[in-house]
Image (cartoon, rainbow, N blue to C red; front, side, top):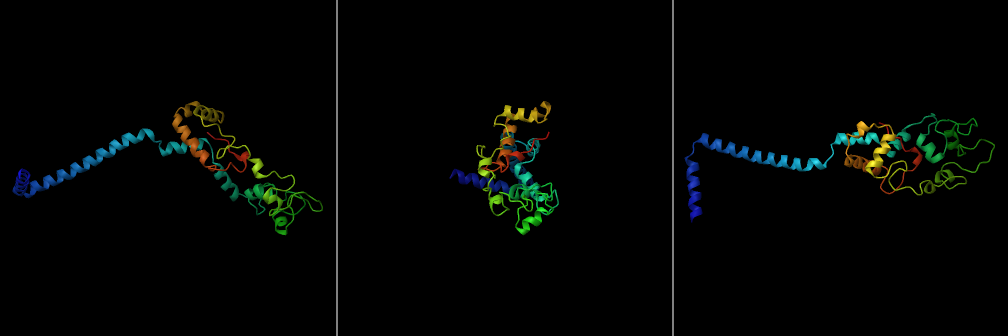
Length: 222
């Protein structure tokens, strides 16, 4: 009963207000809601900010570790240093030919021609060689004298290059210091920043497989 009277009283007082007064009350109500939302956003940001790393800082840290294995691989797939029509990646990983020589076996016939003809680009004409062309022993890495990829990567930590330091802030700092990064620059990054950048760089090598060729791990650049 009492609440009904109070409600009726509020309605009567509201009707008694002029149009300008009602408009003022409405504006104040909207501003109050906006102020509450703004305060909530500010509090949330204040709570989250200490636990996040700015994107620009992460980008700078990733540059310290140099390009990832995946980026280097994509670059090799696009390059054809000797201009024989075969990418550097295919020459190194599939045919085992030189990416710097059009004719790896120096028999007068370019590598791409020998591959198209089905002859071994690593075996000069007139000679008998152990390895065959791509599609047989060379492509699978099982021919005589060929080291299988599993043996090349045996003992590697999955997802981490053997040249990367252990996951320890002190080891990472020493690794970057030896790579030419100054102490002044390193002091700009917390241990948490370094570990986060380390984890992201390691993840780019793959979650379950070691780098396909550990010798191509880039040296970090300052």
